[in-house]
Image (cartoon, rainbow, N blue to C red; front, top):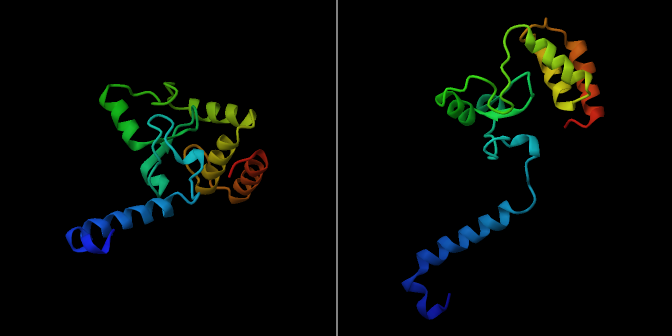
Length: 141
């Protein structure tokens, strides 16, 4: 801004300076990992991610609730990512198949299930720690 014209557009200049500051601040490399983005809409899943997304045992992908709701509204009751139809005992079989294939996301997902005693598993913290260690060795963050 020129001092001569400052009074005419002082508010607009201050607003633009704040926007430029925010752009510099947000582009400093504080990026979220790829797993934090919905694989369907590619938008970042809001934090806390557990409240705004869900993973299915068929593909172990975190899908945002928006994409899940949109799929349900279109009448698709299968997994919105891989379109697999999973019910009952198939959950354990599909999850174990992915764990056997050494998928780090699946190993981490199974560790959480052991730790909290969810789905078809009894709570077992020591098994959860073993699985988290394995997932870390496989490259899970």
